[in-house]
Length: 230
Image (cartoon, rainbow, N blue to C red; front, side, top):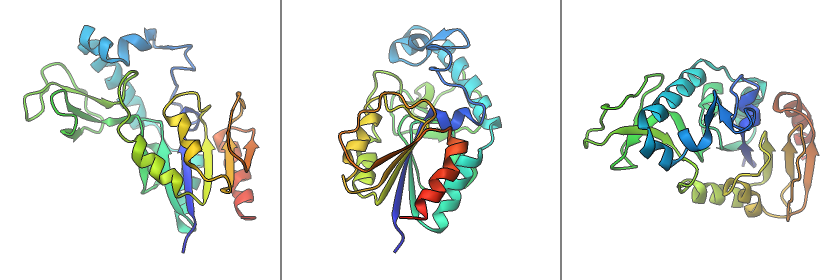
């Protein structure tokens, strides 16, 4: 029976593949404020601006290549039952070969109807514009969880964390909720690792946490060595 390795990833792992984050830009993305392009209010105010923004991000993500950290996590499926919970909206984990990925905040390569959140389409690298409709007649919008919206995948993610034998956090400062609360679902006796170069003020109300103060690409090899002793 393979041990269950649960991995929570954030923007830091994608950044090393060249995908910048809102935090890198000081809350701006190509001079757009978060409120303009990543909230329901922004969508209501200027949907074409929001579509343009995500069209550009979709193109960038489509061209991005997985880095060593992504590839190692995919390779670990040979030895562990690996489940990845990611806050990232790119598909770099899937490109690397990971087969069990939960996207908390949606996926750039998908769009959905404004009338029915369950009517989802895969668009790969295709640009979406006003007037592009779902089969129910609803305008297509990015399949992204915007600030202020519910995170529908948080409960399945919590269930995965409850079942973890080993838990590792890579490239996220755990400042954004509800994702940051997932650590609380991991058992106290479960070995936990945090790979992050900045080591912000993590506040874990749990035990058995080891910090690896490196980037995702540098830290993944340190983590591999730690795994050998478990």
